[in-house]
Image (cartoon, rainbow, N blue to C red; front, side, top):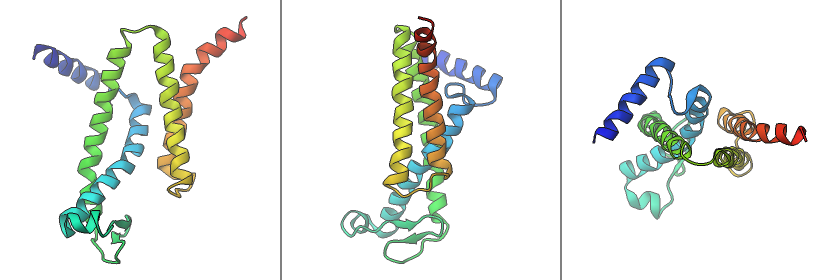
Length: 173
């Protein structure tokens, strides 16, 4: 248990120094803020329908929140502002999970060869860019919506951060 305590103390100290999420950083925290809001809304809306109308309505009848902003269900009924209230706790939980995952991944990559970090950054960057494309083409999000825009900017930056040192080495040859 002392290892967990040391890790929590280290995280708390770094959080006080930076005033942000120490594992994600400011930029990663902003990307996580926007991207996790999408998943939190999906989770919160699904559980809201299950809680109010029962599992049968969601799983069998296919009732879902069709208009998040106005709280309108696919069957035309309204749930009012409950969609936001159902989303918020999951949003906080998902941001915390992203922070924990970033810490675990960085501690794992710290003990591996340096090129593993580059590969992880490229894969993460391309995953964020792919998520942006999926939101734009599959879900119909406008390109300038904050969620796909944050995923695109974060993905391009992460891939650039990994590929720039490699490009500099190749350019010197």
